[in-house]
Amino acid sequence: MNLSNKNILITGCSSGIGLCVAKGLQQRGYRVFASARKAADVEKLRSDGLTALQLDLDDSTSIQAAIDQVLEMTGGTLYGLFNNGAYGQPGAVEDLHREVLRAQFETNLFGTLELTNRIIPVMRRQGHGRIIQNSSVLGFVAMAYRGAYNASKYALEGLTDTLRLELAGSGIHVSLIEPGPITSHFRANARKMFHNHIDAEQSIHRDTYLAMEQRLAKPGPVAPFTLPPEAVLKKVIHALESKRPRVRYYVTFPTWLFGTLKRLLPHAALDSVLLRISRGENR
Image (tube, rainbow, N blue to C red):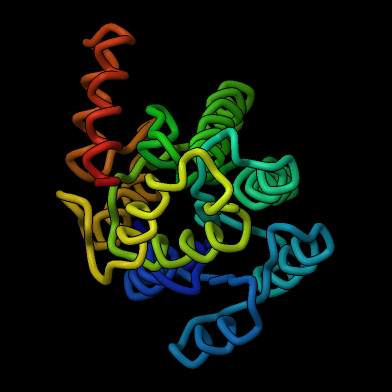
């Protein structure tokens, strides 16, 4: 495949998966537009040799400005969109205020949907394109104390499955990537959101939160079978370059395991497995 004329916009490139995929695709020959929410992160991306721009998924004006910049540089075309920008909001469901859940959805779903919907007409005009959504194993199995993130990823998967059906025959392929534990700053960012939005001291879940906070504060991988972000890059490359990209790409052993267990186990049995894992994490 000639990649010299393949351009792709990636969200959430300040670190982790987004940064790895941006660098990896650029090295492979793609013209990459790496985006981040903060101006300082955009400058860091530029210093790393990437074409970078500011894009805040919570801000419609920022989304449109980023699209305008990209299309001006590409002559109005875009081959790929990798929706990677997201964060995790820990906390028990009964401790989530409406505004906290809304904020989780603004970034992880509403902003992603708005960006995608503004790119689709570009891909329709050119007759082809690739849209890749970075979901999660938590987009199809739920884990305790991750309700906001679970809900946002379940919703992303539902919208993506619908979009794929609606784009059938358009030349636009839509894929979901479902990683398990990946080395990144995700846990550190989640810890910040936990402190910002959850009143642990006044919660019935206070003791569990103490153990959870200790896990979030630990440096390095804490979950078994954690893989580097290059594992996601490999799947993104396939979704971009295959003549028949897959609907879903599992990444890490836990994703494969839970995908299998969800198909085989009764609901109560799967709940039992998930509860044991959650209790083991928070001891």
